[in-house]
Image (tube, rainbow, N blue to C red; front, top):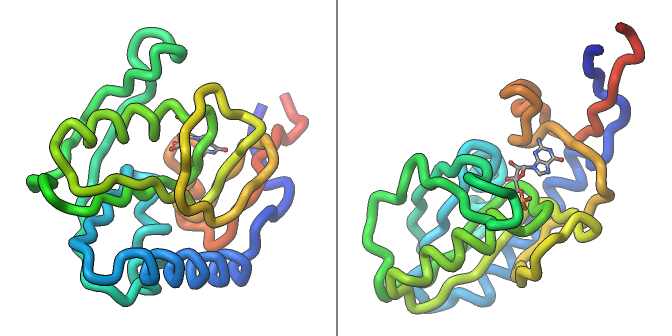
Length: 177
Ligand code: 5GP
């Protein structure tokens, strides 16, 4: 069975507005701090690129790549495929994610980076699916809450496709064999 874009869930305009708002909140909270944005590859790249241009305090960026859960999902242990390039000791770290679903990825990344001595560590996501949460994780900046549906676009993929869509859409079966 194939997949089709069944409906647009978040428009380009809503995304733009959401980035402006979150950028303002971050700019307000990180005055005089040593901010580093760490984006989780690949999905968060599009959000990072829009978000950083809405933040008007000095910042640096870095990237991490993680695999899905190794072992069982409930262990929440994600494998690091690519680590960040710099030392974060004393820095104010903000992890930037595309979507939070179970919460396992962000919980694990926060725990891991916290062992490296940052001054602070917070979480930011473009989209949140609160109904899917398996573990408690405090997400400090949330662009938008969305329903429990599989979405693509704005960095989010299905089999590596659809990331370039400027909006977020629900992906559904096309009904054909
Ligand atoms: P969590 O660890 O919170 O369950 O999962 C976060 C990761 O799962 C996201 O970074 C993303 O890669 C993937 N994910 C969760 N929900 C969706 C979705 O609706 N669409 C896509 N494309 N990926 C998703």
